[in-house]
Image 1: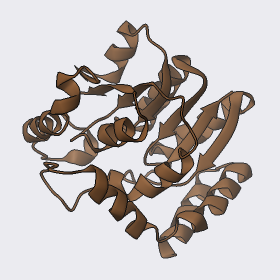
Image 2 (image 1 turned 120 degrees about the vertical axis):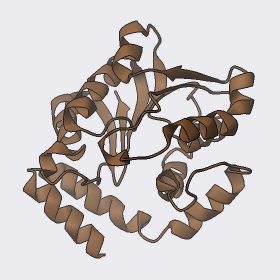
Image 3 (image 1 turned 45 degrees about the vertical axis):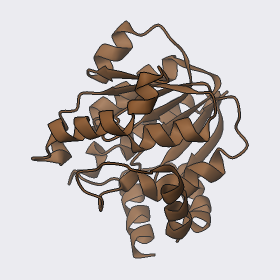
Image 4 (image 1 turned 120 degrees about the horizontal axis):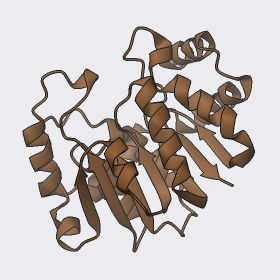
Length: 234
């Protein structure tokens, strides 16, 4: 509960609109202490998964949240992922949405928070973990920045997962570019809404996400705010 009140305090400090804060509060309790449920899902889908650090499984904390929120969604076929790391999120989406395919965009060079992480090994783990999907053309790997990908992209997607460079300026760019190629009725999933790495809170993802929601609220049919934000496009 301490983390909840800290998050609430920070959201207020950066001027988060009341309707977004209310949405977060409403979704907090249903997702509070769901680690056991997420752990069960993790054990079911990540067999023989290679990682540089098995204690750093940030995405796995959201497994129950995502599973519950997409339980009745069946029409996701084309998926785009900005930021892939070792492949956990890509594998989850492919297993959750049958007959789907995914485009994974990552530089595998890290950003501010990664310090001295060995991205050669991280990329090698990604290739190992997703080898089945790559060899069957279910997953396409794009080793480049998201800006370069969007500049050359001519496809539209049913679901886009944004977990790339977390600096506020880049998050803003990724949100705009993703929205432009998201199909009507499609879903935008935004990671690390409650990520407070930068001491200036407004430099973290929450501020550009808040601004994006406010600017596009008339074109949003469903909004779910937690540590990840799920937006459905009208």
